[in-house]
Image 1 (tube, rainbow, N blue to C red):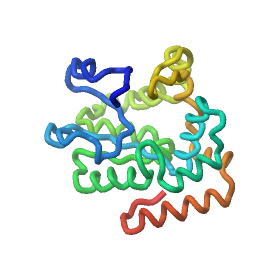
Image 2: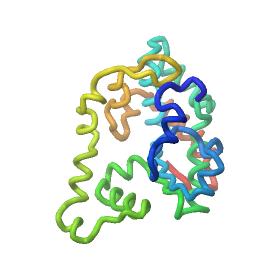
Image 3: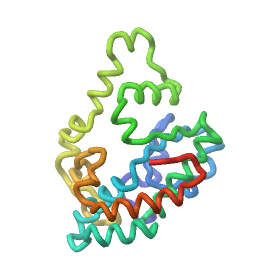
Image 4: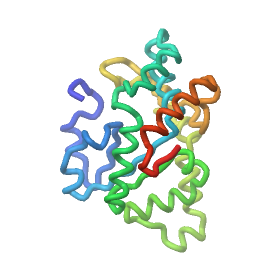
Length: 212
């Protein structure tokens, strides 16, 4: 983003290789060199209903007039910062099928249900697999604990302080760590809202073999 103050491009270019970068951009906006340079892409998606609720909470932190009804209306139309969620998901889903050695497509609910298996899968994909001795000694479980949500949320840099992350609007760092619960949408959306969004997403993803 032109206005982005956190980690300007010049700072990112100074990082030694291999670099680990994160983005919310859809696959269509990634630089062509992502493929030509052999970059590995790990795409983590969530249930669209949980994405909606998470996005609403995030925006509500800076705009208390932003209602869940308004958030639902815009989200259902595909109006969000990075485009329709179904197109975002489909873009990386298709890339993961045609380039499965370069793009790893993960679902948040599946990951949370099988953390150890997913950490091992991720290590294999990044070409840094765990050794048999490490697996026997419980290193994988140690990694899961070290990077657990509660552990990361409690770190001072994440639990306190303010960052200028979205267009010069100060955001408390704690805003990026809420509950991480699968299915939290049920606490905020009506049954009618959930069914309507499910129908829209199902229709948009039809024929792709991608489901939520």
